[in-house]
Image (cartoon, rainbow, N blue to C red; front, side, top):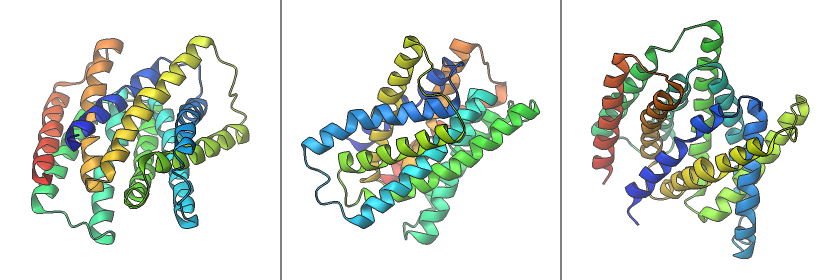
Amino acid sequence: MPVFFVLAVGVLAISSASILIRFLPGVPALAIAAWRLTFSSIITLPFTLKRNELENVSSKEYLLGILGGFFLALHFSLWITSIKLTTVASAVVLGTTTPIWVSIISHFFLKEKNTLSEWIGILISVFGGFLVGFGDIGLSSKALLGDVLALVSAWAITIYFIIGRRLRKSLPLLAYTSIVYTASSLFLIIFCLATNVPLFAYSRKEFSLLFLLAVLPQLVGHNALNWALARLKASIVTLSVLAEAVVSGTLAAIIFKEFPPTIALLGYGLIIGGVVFTARKQR
């Protein structure tokens, strides 16, 4: 299956996350994150055990997977909170500045040297991403806090992607996702218990949306990215996620009437152009 086709499906799937979260105003961010990863783990783990894919996992790989799960839990708890505080555009754009941090770490510490073309594509996409969020940043102190949380969530997911890039070279997809998702769900449940966030006081409709959040953006979206991590450089995978800003921003405009300023339209074009340019070079 063409790797960039899978990557495109993954980006479309994860773009639904911010929209689904907006339909859960009565559910705290930590509870949303906890159920998203718990449902994902419950669905994934039985298939992994049935195929005995955890038999050859080393202790070091388990520890790295648990560490990756912690940073994934940190990312979701911060990013989902940011969506409840600021606009979809700002949360998604700032949360997907990951290529900046992944490229720096990969270039200097993982011996995955970026070419000049890749640097140009990254810079174009990132600049376009900031244009998209420019109109929303600083609207209020509440929105500004959301912007900061989204940015910090990008740092957390950067470490998660770097760990995933290393583990996916040796672990099958199901083994990797089972370890990471299970660890992440446990961390998030602990976060909820420590902060007295309820886990069960929600309606059937809310639980249905939480389940859909696990299936579509998590199992389809993130698994597609994890699958691509074994075949592409981490900086390329995370760069493609910037396209999420385009899809999420468009959906937010249609559903929630969040119309971006004109300058954001230029940003959309730059994001797509940068992703296509860099992906073409990666071929």
